Picture: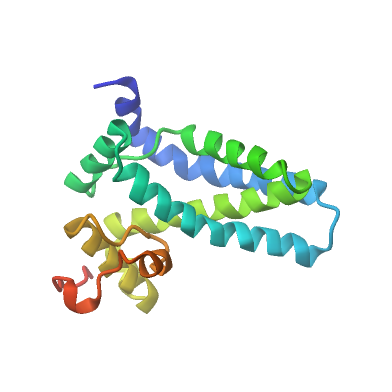
Length: 194
């Protein structure tokens, strides 16, 4: 097993991301707040746009990286499909480094404050995804109490049974737009775990 695989399958790594990633998102929020010169409404719009952009990024990464042609991410994700309750996660610094790359790419266009706020929104979307995905596998009973999350639970169960569909964890929007959403009658109905 490679070092990257050992890190990805480490429970310590899995749990540490639930601390490091929210703190990193707050770091972008702080930098954006002190750097952004525009009105508060524009700052909030930057964060909201980033949050919405995360949904597309999540879909693309899940579909084309985790189910794609690169062996290492595909293999680790296949391990997750094989052991859905295992604490397998992205190695600790991969997401913060990815967020920095996104930030610097965005910063080429607008000002640094807007770029930080957009990155904060993307990172907040990622954190939402990470928490929901964790709960889908480890506390589905808590999610099944909400109609929204109960639907996400069904969609995610369908993804594990039909890996070419339902790549969105935090939203089904992009699956619907890109034709990877299974209609209810196409899904083998399985009672939600309560």
